[in-house]
Length: 262
Length: 161
Image 1 (cartoon, rainbow over the protein chains, first blue to last red):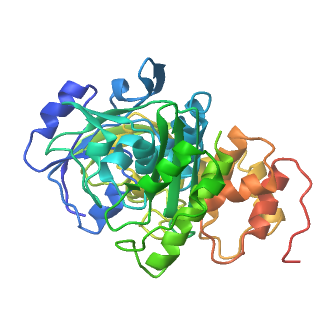
Image 2: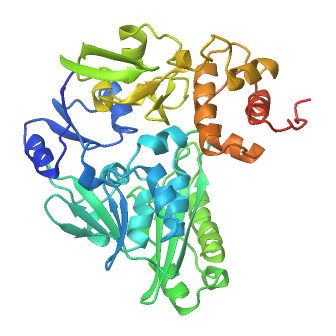
Image 3: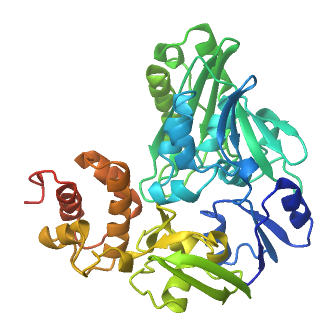
């Protein structure tokens, strides 16, 4: 990979200053960015590691929900979110493999918005708030298509706050080589209604399956989505599965998530 | 070039490195600790697994400067103080948990991290934990047996027999 200057600030304020430099790129766990740089698909001139910022790490239950620092690893979320939001802990516990979970972070995953990543579905299904160094962004406004988000140049995620649902579950159908979601569905039931978010399936990245949300808000049972069909339009076709296959998976996984919600 | 300092297998080391220097390159080329293998260089195979502050990580996806000050352990630091094989290493030998041996350093480091957290894993837990380590020789059965044996459990008969 091309060389770059490496900086590792210890406060958000110092990270903001470092990110203002020309060609600066935030680095979190680096489990996607490092391979991307090796392939020269990214070549920042300054790499700003966010892993040394104590105020961006940890899991904390507050009045607005469960707040997770942007630089918190998947392994930490799997361990520390379990008592408060078990479905989110389960999701984190099954991302990638143990080594990936020891480095990869929630902020990095949500900032990258890989169309097959697990975390975006939890953020969208929970109606979570993405907190950055500048502002708070509602999940519905944050995700803007494959690898595309509302983040501006130089802006980085300092944390994500999840309203805690009454019950929820995430079920993914693994792509066994990459362990990304071939398709994954996160169902979250709140007093105000049910939200269903789908990852791995759409050319536009994570999306809400609103028909299922309406049906499940009326009756929270796997049978409630039985009569619905998922359009294969704009779903991903690749060597692992066709759009029609993924459309079927969306429904199957939604039913499994509803049945397994806790 | 920037100075990096870390503890590797109990010894303090420091060197001048570039921003792009990966931990795997620092260990192999800087310290001549070539037991850490680079299999894929795309963060998938796990052969480069080492421990950073007690956690297993893929050293080909970590920049040396990002672990400045850390306590790093590699396969060279796994043997007992008298040079004899550790329990996990011996179990890999006893149960034929390797053939070509290329993945073995990563397998041993990942297994050691598992047993530190979960001293008596089930077979399913061992398989789940080793998902990030690819072996193209053994078909995994004997690796799983080795890890179970290293945990002091009776090893099950395996499907491959």
